[in-house]
Image (tube, rainbow over the protein chains, first blue to last red):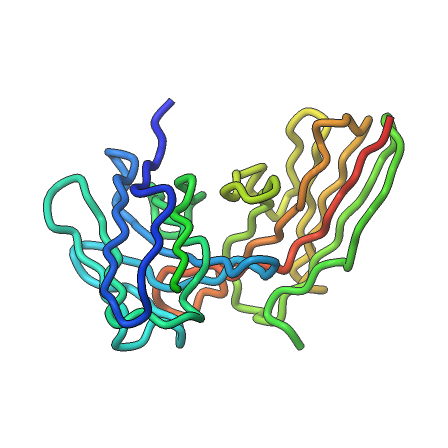
Length: 113
Length: 111
């Protein structure tokens, strides 16, 4: 069964450092998403990406964040100058259609120290 | 009013019970609706989409009431393995592609 894969599963970084979270969406999917979930809180939408550009972003997704599809398979989330409050689980998801069911990767747990 | 609001939990039910979860959404233009389940510290997993006509998948039935901006999920014959957090997810149809998650309702099924 095709699945979304994310690497690494856990990343620890120092405050102020840059991190890149990586995702390989399901191969025939065209829409890609990043979400985050702070421990004990709800899943929050960050950004969606379609046709090599951002489709929509939330107020959380400020200049500190960027996304890229550097090749035909990877989808990355870059967080510049990390802050303690960026510590969360980051989920990548993909869907076949824009308003279709999205399938999630297993997540990257980011810990900023 | 929150964009997506769910029943506060937790729900504690015995095996074999029927349990219903409710969810309301604030944006009447919302277009797509889903139920996901999330196990502790795991990713959300799609349970089912919710259609205007209602839909059923085995022991699970989802209903949508657009007039009341209300979605429900019914689980019949609960199993221990149904213990999880159930997430109501709505596409608010605000232009781009996004979904809003409810805070989730925790279900504990006990033997």
